[in-house]
Image (cartoon, rainbow, N blue to C red; front, side, top):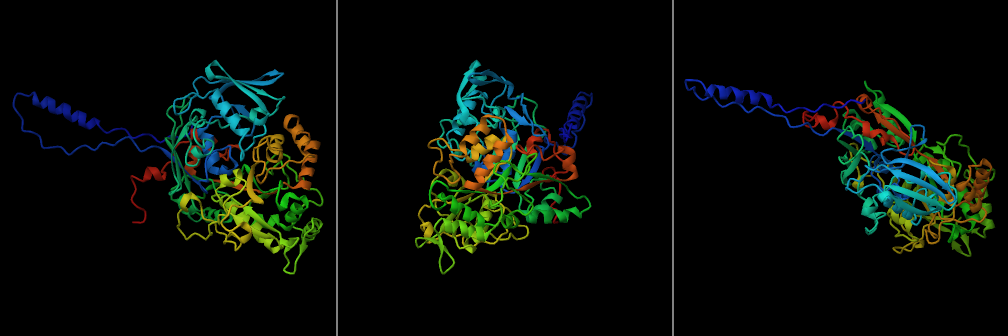
Length: 616
């Protein structure tokens, strides 16, 4: 059991004894002089809520765990403790049924292939509605029809979702046997609040979560201060959480040592960026150095190309562009502690990961290969060293979500490298959801980045200012149409680094359903590839089939993988004793065990009412 800070009781007993003595005195034969007024006996209210404060890099653009644009450490943390999942990964990553949500889930028919779920009759949302079949229906319909989703391929194999037992039992029917069905219906959403709400799939998640089906519920998002407040979910039907509250707080790297040493935060979950590791080196020399645990992030950063139309519709141009890029230099500039990725499906965190880039693939910068590919596509280099076709210079628009700081920095470095290689490049940074759901976006200029001053707080919106200098190519150019909407040729976007390889490949590189993001960057459909992806989606993960799919992807280049970032879990002795925090499973992260966390001894929240300002 973890330790729990004891509540301070009311100090009312002395007052009761005094009242009894006064009553006895009043009954005596001779009247006594009235006693002098007693000083009021101070009574302590019930202690302040027990709280664990967690430092994060930033809040991100939104909190829907099913949207690629919303992927962040904060979104993963919120989903782990507020949203119900039929199956959850254990510490080894193996999926186990969550009995608080479902009492059973099993294949009940092979023809048609059907999975039946019996839901916990007590499971309900914090709004008072039961967790029921309608939540399964809602998630299935959204995941199979919306762009910008994570892991949609399995949902597209479903043909029907039927309700039984007044919504507390669900039958899910598939088009054909689907071996990865246990990965589905994680992070269910409250259909009764979302299905008829305007923008229900995105808007309610920009600054909150509509309801909770876990041990905590989201109470407040303060983007100005960079904080998210969660409180124990009182309607939760299982063992209640130990701590009353959890706070996620955006902490700039330059203030991390002070925040940790003063216990303004109890732990931190930053990326392993140079400024963070330098700050931790300072703390390592202190009398009580922090505990630092490393863990890979559940995402791979990559560039996705618009292969349906525009200049990158020609695979030779995609090959030439990829050969102009130095992926190692991008990683060194943006996330030097990250692990290089040389595969389209697997990530370095996967057991048995191996690079799949064949000889001749653009695994590294190769100006000679770039020139050969662009020349074959009909481009010539003019007197200024610019690549042009029919007298029109080759120019690309590179997009990154405005509040995804690391994505914007990647876009800037890519633009610099392309400009150096003779290709015009413009960086735009519209809101992340717009970038992944619209065929054209406003040519929004990324905010200039500056090195934060010592002691600077989080930037507006809770984001940590980046320390890389702004690129001169970061403003809209005439090629981008001035203020007109532009089509993005290259988009910086993450892909998931967990789950079965077949659904990953099919979700990220398979042919989308009709009308689902057909003309968006990152959507692709290659006749030689789709049969391989279909075989991996519904059959065993045959290494030979995976290898052939990877070879096709390296030839067609719908995307270019970059790296998998490393995350840190930083804690002090008191936090370790009260939380036993670990990095957790890669898909759900450190807050997987937050229900059992107790408040660390001497935390900032407990001291705030007792201690004087340390500056005095």
